[in-house]
Length: 470
Image 1 (cartoon, rainbow, N blue to C red):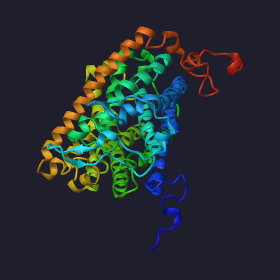
Image 2: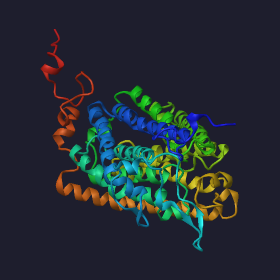
Image 3: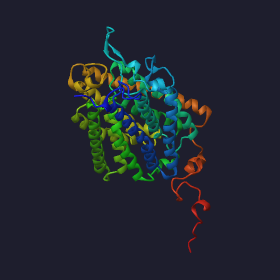
Image 4: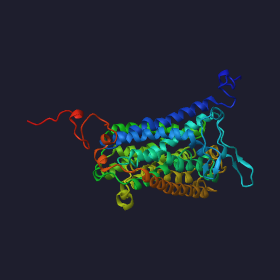
């Protein structure tokens, strides 16, 4: 049978022989879904889950990060993450703006994998779509990582300090993890499995957020004692956008609309649903009230936990991972956190160390247990990879997962600390006490709602004349 003209190559100057329209369409869709997780997803989630007086500031931190990452990404950071190798953990900086580069076939030059004897084991990654699509897809991943870091710093970090933190952390932390694990760096070639971001996005976000929170300092005593969500329905909306958007997050991992993509999306939903049910049951049993905010946390931990292994584990394993995603981070957040002096000392506003750090580490280790050999061969550059559950060299894989996580954790603690120390030499990391007392009105001159409430100066011109009781 002849192939319809619309599906043939060279039907126009914009349709090359190597272009697969289905793969390109899916990858652009997946990229946009991930972008929607940030804007408006995380913007709405942060704006709703914090205290009223911080709604504008929290939402704006997310929006600013999304925009700033875009510019840094195309000017220098993309090639540091996915370009030619500079060091075993870093690519060469350079712009991704030239049309000759962007309309050519996508390739990740450092990903060609060789055996010990020097013979080629797996060819470099060359998807059937243009480089512009890869730049877009990977940019929205980088952007949401910085937004996740912000979750640890809400309610007190100076906005000017945040404006400096975003490009510095992207450049010196995110690009290292991305190149090392995905772009052809040493962890990629060693065989560490990170299907779509446990080691590149979630563990770094949790660890960097916690580390930065230490350097920035805590919220006010009043805010730490009472920080009720100003709009739980907004938080639920943001969580819903995250859940549905994760189809693009994990479904776009193979760089193709293939069977592995389908498996990843199905596993993502299985794990997330199980996590929500388990977390809600634990809240109901131990605290006598099923928490909606807890359910939002459970959605996040389920999504995060499955991410390192979404396309390489079986459905039953995704269910097991969901049960653990709804219980282990629940324990560290709701029980261990309250007993630990270290965790109590550092004011991690939204508990990102638990929802992303713990859940991401848990997912990486469980991937080392449950990675199924046949599914691994569909995706990974190192042939014959498998989890410890399947015997053979699976025990070594588990060791690689733990070692890879330790590298990511160590790098982020050190580099994030250095960045915070450098920034505070230029501007204060923490807002002034006056701004902390008032919130959005003092920081931005704007308020989330046209209502007078806690943390604001009563202003007749804004809130109307005060009513004196008769």
